[in-house]
Image (cartoon, rainbow, N blue to C red):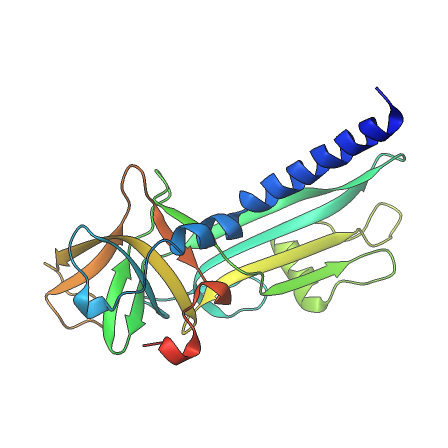
Length: 230
C-alpha cells in the first residue's frame, strides 16, 4: 500500500472518529431528540403523550446552592480536575465529579409542570451549558473562593515543594428563574398532599418510559425563537 493511501486512510479514520464523538455527544444527542417534537403549552398537555415544554425553572422547597458561584439552583454539576504528569506526558485527572438535582417546577405563563428526577434508576438525560470555570497553576494562585472550595473537598492546593498544583473547576447549573427546555411523557397526577407554592389539586408531570427518559437542558439552542415564546 502506497504512502498517500495510508495517509488518506488515517485522515479518514480520524475524521470518522471526530464525527462520531460529535454525533453522540450529550449536547448533540439531546438537541436531536428534542428536535423531533414541537413545543406544547402546559395547559394543553395530554396524558401519555410525549411533549416538549419551554419555561422557567423554579424550586419547590429550599433550592440547592451551587458550590462556587453560590447561586440558587435546582440542578448543578461540578467537576474538579488535577493535572498529573509522569515526566513524559501529562493528563487531567478527575478528582471530583458531583451532580445534585431536586424536584422542581417549570413555569409557563402562570401554569406549572412538576418534574421528579430519580437517580436509581436514573430517569432523565441532561445537558447543561458550563456557567463557570476557574483554575490555578504554578504561577497562578487560586482565588480565595476557589481555595475555600478545594479545602471543603479536602484537596490540597500546593505540592510538597510549596508550588501551586494545576487544578481546574467547571460548574454547570439550572439556576432558579432560568429558562430551560424539558421533555417527557405527560402524566397528570392528583395531589393528595399540598405542594408548596402550588394551589391546585392536580398537576402535570413528566415521566420516563422504558425507551425514553425525561430530557432536561438549559442550552439556548433548545429554546424556541424569541418571537414564538410563551
